[in-house]
Amino acid sequence: MQTIIGISPENREVVAHELSKLLADEFVLYTKTLNAHWNLEGMDFHSVHVYFEELYNQSAEIVDGVAERIRQLDHYAPATLKNFLQLTHLTEQNEGGNDSRSLIKQLLSDHESIIEFIRGTISEFQDAHKDAGTSDYVTGLMETHEKIAWMLRAHLK
Image 1 (cartoon, rainbow, N blue to C red):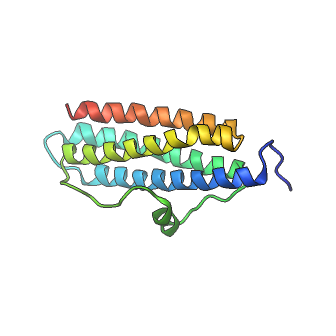
Image 2 (image 1 turned 60 degrees about the vertical axis):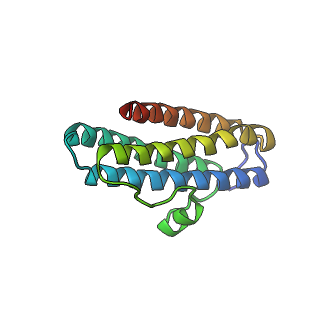
Image 3 (image 1 turned 90 degrees about the horizontal axis):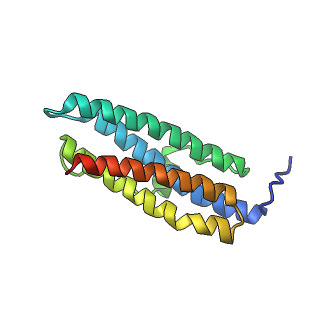
């Protein structure tokens, strides 16, 4: 069945490809947040462990939402680790230790990287590809990441 949503097939393809990069970033961040939750050590273990659990649950919802947005554009979401590693802007490297400060710094850096990537797509989706829906969706997603980054940053002060 043909997808008729007011966006050309060519524009949907470009937007879906950019969303695939975002999905890869989100999945790598999800995995890194699980790592932080599982391997955290230190005097503040309990409170930060609980906070990281909140973050990875929120991250799982984001991953699902981005994949569903790709499907709404009638494209398939990349769904293999190999694809994610090819598409992501993030690294898998675990820099620093397993203390809360090191792990929070890493997660903050990744959230900030995603914020910058999303910010670069908002007007492109709207103006160049005539996709106001995805532009609006990623704007809300960027705001979510900005709030998380603010909270992570607050832990480091």
